[in-house]
Length: 208
Image (cartoon, rainbow, N blue to C red; front, side):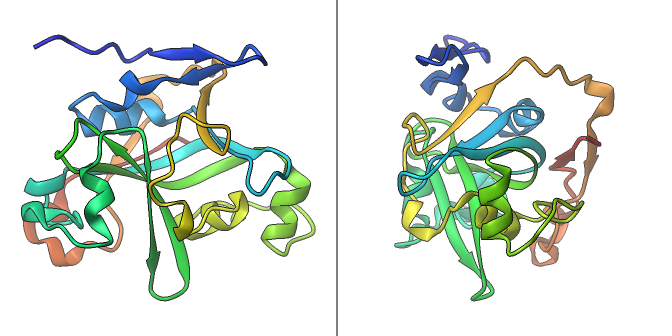
C-alpha cells in the first residue's frame, strides 16, 4: 500500500501552507489527531473576516471498531452518513440540544474515522470571536470546549459535509513546532458508555 505523506500542503495566494486532501486520507486517526496539534483551524463564515486559532486539544474516534464513535459497528444514519465520506470534510452535530461540535472526517471513503476539535487558542479575528462569544476580552475559557470552538468560529450544523479545502473552513500550518513530549494523552471526555473503549487514551492536548 502506498504510504501517504503527512505533510501534504497547497499554497494559497497569501503564501500560507494549507492542508491538502492527502493529509486527511491517512489511515491512522490517532496519528492525525496528534498532527493537528499546533495547526491553525480557520473560518470565513457568511463573508465575514477570518477567525481562528491554534488547535490545542483533539480527540480521535476510530469508527466502526470504536464503541465511543457515532459510527460504531458501521452505524449509518442521516446524521452519521457524512462520516463515511472520503476524508477532508466536516462532521458537525448538535449535542445536548445546546452546542454544535466540529469534527474532521479522515481516512478513505466508507471508513468512518473522525477527530473532534475540543479547543483552540484564538489568534485571528479576535474582535469577531469576542462578539460571537458575548465577551469583552479574551480569557482562558473562551475556546476551551468543543461547543465554544464552534460558537467562536461561526460553525454550526449546516456546515456538516463542508469541504475543508475551501475558503470557508480550512486548516493551515504556520510553522509552529510541537515537541512530541509536550503532548498530553488522556481518556476522552463524556464517553463512559463505551466500556473498555472509554479507557483509550485518545484525547490529546498541548499546554499553550
